[in-house]
Length: 263
Image (cartoon, rainbow, N blue to C red; front, top):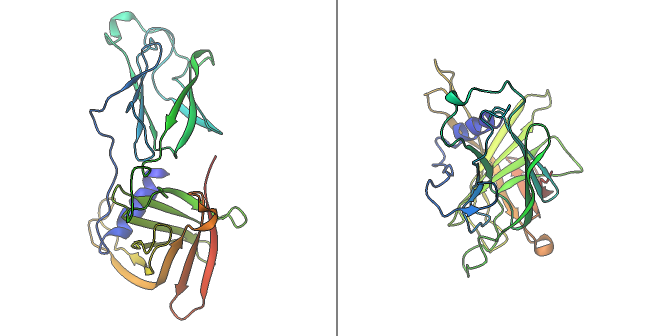
């Protein structure tokens, strides 16, 4: 589902402006945990993509390396490796088996990491680590908080926003909702910052796309302005609550409270 959402968002971006896709840098210092596991990078911020590498003995010990499962319980990250399988002959195992697991970006805070075998037996438990705020060393005019993530209104589920904010505070917001007959509907807007907590009014756009012979279609879309929107994160001075203020063409201005989605 995530790849499908990303494809829709990238399709919407065409014709409006270029969209950046974050990648994990291949060479960063690592933090050596226990049992040969490492966490990359060693100094973690809310702008980093975290990668866990498990150099264990899954091969030849009755487990396969894939599929693994990642759960988040409050601030605890729990990784379960592989699945029960037949014991593989040592001759077919690589010399140094490992498993690379992308944990993604985390908001600033304190976390613990637990890695379990498929049986539930722990490889290690509650390894503590800290994610620092990527904005703490910035001064005006830069925005000090990172608002990237999935936002919604818990009191009115069924719609939400995906917000991407890069290292120089460029924003892309993708709003997913539904038409009265239940069909999915997407809008995008890319506001500039007015202050360090409020954005300027930006064009709210949607687009159509002609079907092509392959997916995604190679034909360009036709974006259309349907209104305006802005974001306001002044509520409580935190990075976990805000507002979207929007106006569709010919309609009244509406304000919705949004909160960062957390498991």
